[in-house]
Image (cartoon, rainbow, N blue to C red):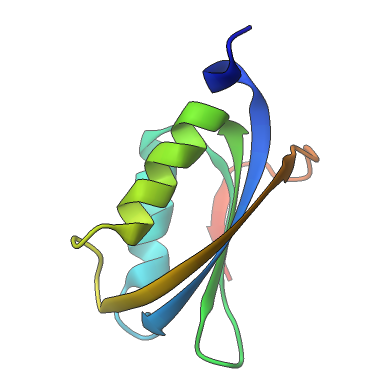
Length: 95
């Protein structure tokens, strides 16, 4: 198995104008395109927390989408944390 095939968990905290603009729906669509499972959650401080599990390569692709210029709203910064997959998700949900 190459590093790109390793199953991982990406947690990303996205700051900017990312609530009320379709950001979670857009994130879910990008995640499902890559067959990732997880969740996009609005936080009380205005950030969106994105948790995605799947291959490292697919998670890195999602992270690039989050940091790229094509998101709804406006992304000011993305803080990421990587770890082992926990296998707790089925599908990708917005909450």
